[in-house]
Length: 166
Image 1: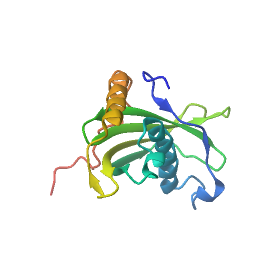
Image 2: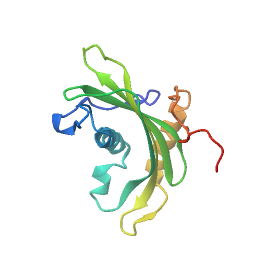
Image 3: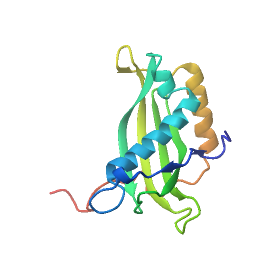
Image 4: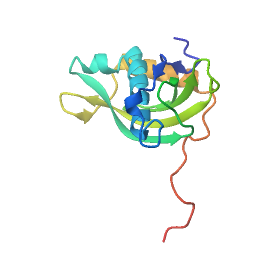
C-alpha cells in the first residue's frame, strides 16, 4: 500500500437485486458497497472484521454522511478510495469516494462520497476505548501521509435548507 495515496479497494459490481423501483442502485446498497470497501481497508490496518473476529477490538460507525452524485445501475463496476482525514486516541475520521470503474462511458466518474466517523470499541465491554498502540501508529501515519491529498468538496457539509431556524 502506498501510504501517500488514498487506499483503493477492489472493484465491486452492482447486483441486479440491489436496484429499486427507479431502476437504479437503491441508496441502502451504496452503503453496502462503502461498507465492503472500508472493511477491506480496515483489515489492512489491523482494525477490520478479521480483528473483530478475535472478540477483542472493532470499530463502530458513529456518523455517516453520504452524498449520492450519480446513478448506478445493475452491472456497473465501482471502486472505492479511502482518505484518512484525522485520527485521535479513539476516533477515525475518513472519506470514501465511489467511482465508476471499467471501460464504459462512465469511467472515472464519482458516483458517491461518504464521510464517516468511527470509534475504537472494546468488544468485551462494548465501550469506546483507545486504539492499541500499533493501530494508532498506523492510523496516525496514514493521516499524515494523506494530509495533502485533495478533499472532496462534500466533506464537512451540513444538511439543511440554508434558512434560519424557526
